Length: 410
Ligand SMILES: N=CN[C@@H](CCC(=O)O)C(=O)O
Ligand SMILES: [Zn+2]
Image 1 (cartoon, rainbow, N blue to C red):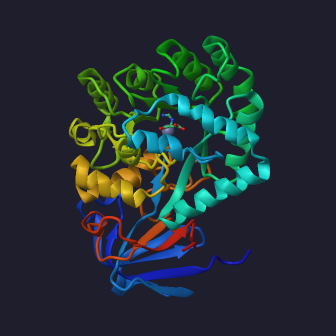
Image 2: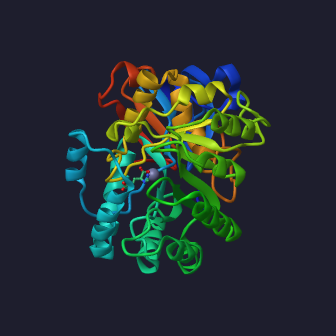
Image 3: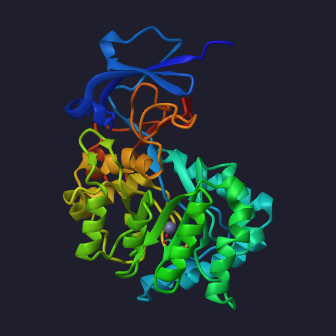
């Protein structure tokens, strides 16, 4: 066996590790990092760095963990510009638009769907995303959900089954829910790690959502929920009750929802990043802006003790961007998060939402979302001396270089 190539990234002006184990030392100055193969093998002061095969001079710029985008819908064909234009002219978002994308997705062949997905992942990676979840949900029959799951599994790091995205036109909601929990679940099962349900007015009600979550849990899948996007509803409570890893959107929360989420984290030490984890509240600010919904109450949730993640929700209906830089910028400028909090939400907490946050070699896969020895070498070099520039210089092209599993991909 040949030894892995080692690369020293040195002269890092600000190294934001997002490793809670480092406590107050989680931001290092004049630092260096060594990558060996796909993993991080050393972190420390630049002056004490070991000899390596190769060297990369960061020229005093800031190095962060690569973004972990824990919520995307990238397996689709077609275009919804007209719907977006109507929304900008005053229409509100409704779940029914999903049917338009379903028609176009079913009509695309495997080659085109794969090409479109790969192009979108490449865009995300070029923007600093190094670990990415994506969902089915634009197939909505057994054949096309299974095909979406299979194609997604060849490109994304993790795949979520979202057969329960919309009841297809002409189908009875209960009969469709039955299909989602039975034959469709069996067909996608080899390709997916997670299941999700769009628990919302116009999509799946509480009872149907409960059936989907129970069936998918019994099939051994991890759970996530689209909840409380368009109004208050049962999504958050269901997610907590089922021990879902994440509930996403969380725009309209009753006090009891915030309490349920906070209670799920009562055994967790946020500063140390250890303990019994709860249900992450995943905020999707790009979606909130594109649908003109109030931004999710990220500040309130953090203050209540909830771990919040930021994700792009890249999809053709409500959020046609995979820019995590943009999500972080918005979280700081408009949601009241500090830069540290926003970066943590888009890295460490994203990994938490996908179960990939602690230790190395969890289930044979390395942890992501923080820069620590043994973790996957997923790194994002900014074209700026500090992460603060993400909010200070909104919209600027701040991604200078990206390493994904140890390979420089940009
Ligand atoms: N809310 C449900 N699903 C997507 C939107 C899907 C669509 O409109 O195509 C979301 O997360 O926003
Ligand atoms: Zn979504």
